[in-house]
Length: 249
Image (cartoon, one colour):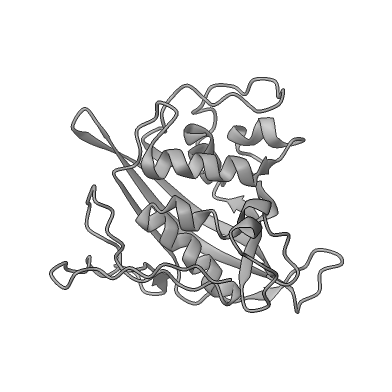
């Protein structure tokens, strides 16, 4: 079932400035607005590349509803090996529930955390879907895409904008709908196995390089059922995707 809502920006709104560097996909980056008017129609997740573009669209437009419709029930986010933010999740992984909770808080607020006032994200314009290299994965149903990502998250703090930046690569593993583990709540809404729809099954973070910030968040507490969210807000300046997720969890 395809439930992609298509919203069109009013003609009066100008498009944001073009990207300075060629080869990047920026889904018509909107002007800063608390109204969160969608700047372009949401891409239909009818191919591996388009589900990654829909992922970026959801961040850009801060849309938690569509974001919940692109991850499989067995989805996993894999923190970069040298990212201290991922320490609690080495043995007990970051699952779909955590992904959606973190995104909800970042996109619209919650858990006593201010939402982002603006999110800018760019990914590669040409997204090449390759075979999934993991053992036992059939290339008909499983593909992988690695893309460069540049993310800026702005949060208004007492009238002053604080900007955190994520830069590096993201590796996505995609699965076709007739082989995907569809979440039960989406099945209840009518989603079914569908060979024309693609889902995100796994996301490996590659934004923590040799010079990535370490220890910006408090040391991880022992994992019980659900790791305690970090107390500090997202640090200003360079951060990792893992730090973003933990800061808003």
